[in-house]
Image (cartoon, rainbow, N blue to C red; front, side, top):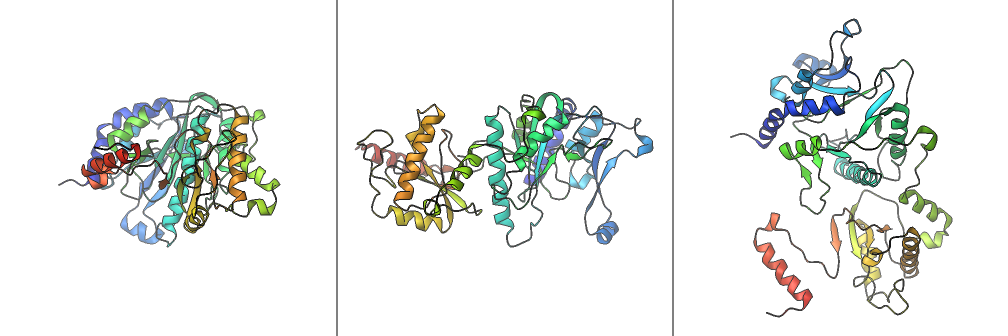
Length: 412
């Protein structure tokens, strides 16, 4: 009986020609060079302490004759470990110093260490933040679980070739946030800083990993699912249907210092506050994230002075957040931001909530001001109903329906 890995491999093989045509159109910046992973012989593995060799092809004396072709790309996407895989990477820029895409490589090489699970979780959290930020800028980013062990590739396709320096600056403006995203190191970007006369670096295409028995999974964006990652045909559909986005801002309009996103704005606000006003906030630690509802969980549902007025703390709520903070990051979630369309109104509401939380000595990491549901490992809400049929079977629906009726005060 075929394993799951073998079944997914057959799906990639079945769609290899289709993927190759997609790559030729959207990913190939130049055809005269490419990167490739070569599988080493058993003797070479012992001698070199690794299972593969990465190289740029073809040799200099063959350039201009041997090219990137549909056939080579098809072999890449059809690769399977037991059939001498030919895994390819494409260069980040053309001869004219333009680029069709940018890539961010968030590595996790310490897969055998004690801290590997924590490292992988922080990598994912950082990757998801950047994925969301690219979406807000009008792009359709591809976040790929590239290794199955905490390594992620983030791709952004461009509708038209853009100056490589502009593409580099856009990528760099994201990765300079690596410390505030609690990553161990600054991720590698593709393209890198432009060097005259250099071929540039190459980035491995989606598909089979060169070391692990793993085919890239694609983030669906549906974080409410038990498994929001797409595999096999579903992942391939997401890749092929990815919509190339607008050109990046010109270099003159950009700065590779930390970008003024809501996160960096919040950081600057905190710097200007007194230490006593910040004592309950703590830096991201790689802990799991728990969303906690404001009204009905932390605050009594009392409104006497308008929408920015917040009721008194519910008995035990402050100690509850202190306990949660011992093992999680706390994201304050509230419907109070719904319907507020201007930034001034959002800032006013956020300030009101933050002032209330600090006044009553609550522990929390941040306040969620957006309308989309934030990614988290748990959600605590006085109107929430637990329902997980994927794990607990069809009976979960009956239990959830009963709980919903209780909240709605429906009596059978």
